[in-house]
Image (cartoon, rainbow, N blue to C red; front, side, top):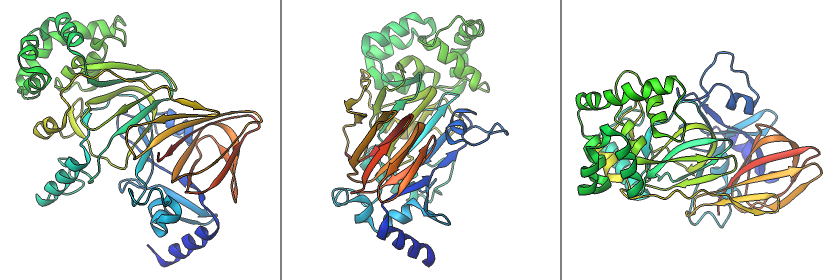
Amino acid sequence: MPCHNLIVIILAAEKFKMFPIQGKVQHYAWGGYEFIPELLGISNEEKRPFAEYWMGIHHQAVATVRLSENAYTGLENLIRSEPRRYLGKRILPNFHDLPFLFKVLDVKDMLSIQVHPGKEEAEAGFDAENAKGIPHDAPERNYKDKNHKPEMALALGEFWLLHGFRKEDDLIQVLEKNEILHILIPVFENSGYRGMYKYVMELSQEKIDHWLAPLAARILPLYAQGKLTKTDPDFWAARAMITYPDKMDRGIFSIYFFNLVKLEAGQAIYQGAGLPHAYLEGSNIELMSNSDNVLRGGLTPKHVDVDELMKHIAFEKVIPEIMEGELHGAERKYVCPIPDFSMSTINLASGDTFTYTVDGPEILLVLEGEGKAESIQVHSLKKGDTFFASDGEQLTISTNSALKLVKAWVP
């Protein structure tokens, strides 16, 4: 860290514990063109895909902190300059840095079928790939860091995703409904979720093309005619074929294997290590441990490592648990079964105030409206603004119109 930056951080630390930050946009091809630019108040005349907006300290996209009118630094520099001050004594025994990564996602085209490793598996995988000399930015790299990546998604509108294996009777019903999938019924009955999944994941591309051709012949005309609904796996299978036209993607089978879930605005869902899933359409707030470790199983042109994927998937039925959050005054809390993170929304009407003491590090994002946040400083709030608030900050949020924020915090 340059010496002058360190001096500015120290001087800022003497007075302030809340700072405006600027996240980093990720322009992945599956992203939409309007939602994130509109949220952030920026132009997108070039029609670039705005897929994700990262707010955190992950080395791939570190947020920038505004210390003063002309002084900036990385969020990780600020925290590491005085961890006890910014993280708090409650957090430091378990985490030595910001433990979560906060994101906004806008899903225009479906994401890959994926699963995330647990903590021990991530550490072992990262070290093993380092030992093999695989560069950290290599496309065939599975492990970008040593951390696990449990995550929670909060829908900002209608949001569709795949989430874990269907329970047995539901899965059999789906397979029976589709004639070309009948062959998988005895495979599932004899060898369960693992055997069925292994069977399709190890098929040659030639066999997959041959097998799925009749499915395409049936569902693509129905999709084009608007005769398929989003509650039908055929809808998403057809869309996958259109999104990835060069070949029949083996991930299409997973669309029939996994639970098809629709979230409404304000509903959330948690996805722990080993749970296979894929986002299909819509915008959400995503909160996860500070990691970018993804093992992919299809619906992607990216690297798919079947052997590594099979090591980490939880081959068990999943009954989706949709979280409505617990209301505490103006704050609705979504609490997850891990110590790394939780999420809240704060909704204020005209004239309302919300006062609390920050307990550990937080990141706040303004989703709608205008207002102000008062601590030692007064920060104006408007849509798209993002702030880092550190441990012990006494914060009062108010509005003369209406205001909606979402915050990430450590439980």
